[in-house]
Image 1 (cartoon, helix red, strand yellow):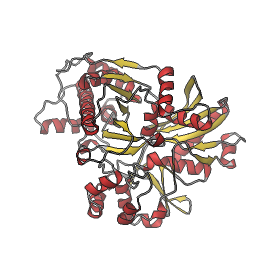
Image 2 (cartoon, helix red, strand yellow):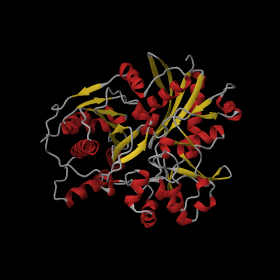
Image 3 (cartoon, one colour):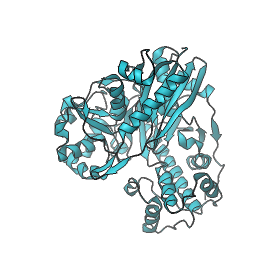
Image 4 (cartoon, rainbow, N blue to C red):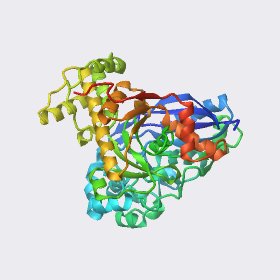
Length: 476
């Protein structure tokens, strides 16, 4: 493929447009645009500024088109959040999944469908911000009755480019409204939850064509050539798992960013009561794989802590804190439960961690470096626990842990994870989500062929990886 492809990769704190050339022995990618993703709090809650994201995305695509001839583009983002539309127009700014409106809707949903039955039907770990609960909040407010369509965030942006309203399956599987066995919308759930079936758009799969960018938008972007938009794993974790550079099947992955998604890839859902109790989720992946994983709070704990310290000391920087944390003696800091619900909302994270430790009669770190070490030790312990659980739940043995995403750059976290898990950790690629997006696009365009394993082999051959063996950092 002589033309390049563009990946629009939207995270919870920033977005980027990546430009790539892909072939049987070629995988070159670079960032052409990076922009912040800044939620906005108004009188009615915390919202995503999707108009700003759309403008920044289009600016990035225009930059990419000035630098290369594009064969197409695809969009991935975080999961569960959506916009409501009526007659093709968006009804207000989408709510942020960390908005506190969702908590009151959980009981309303469970009055209609029990947690056990929900898991049997949709296979999802209970998280209070899943789309199911957000829709219940919109129904209680009367807002849902005004809408005739719901579009998840990447599908909304693709609609604005192409005019096509669809739902890509990997992201749709995070809504709680998809039948975990068939991969189609669950009529049983939508009927019982009072969600009009027509609200949900037609489903498509990674590798399907969504449509072409409209001529008007192409003109704004600076091109008069057709510009196809392809469906990829539009849930960012689904794309990241495509780019896990694994060999064989005895591996676990940690897609490590704002959230840490810890799990394995399986051929069919795992719907045991033990899995539900352990808070494991079944989400769809590329090529009909199932991502069986547990959501760990992730580097949100660290980023919110740094943000809090900067409110009183603008000179605080992450790298010196990590260096200080690496010097903290093993065993000098305690470990806390990273999954505690108090850590979900934005705010003063160090105070919340200190409160948790005090409640459990554990020592509170005395310095910022010790707080950072405490967070990283706790994340590594959560990863180890999740991997041990997934072995028990699936009956499979994992000898290797792949850490992909931004967290793969955190050498201390990678070393602690190797030590806590007792397994080899392979770190990288950093831009796994964008790579997975690009690989599926390239395969759809015919630039490369083969299974997920062949795509991962290309990543393994063309990307720089770091290996960490257990024992590199003594655990007290």
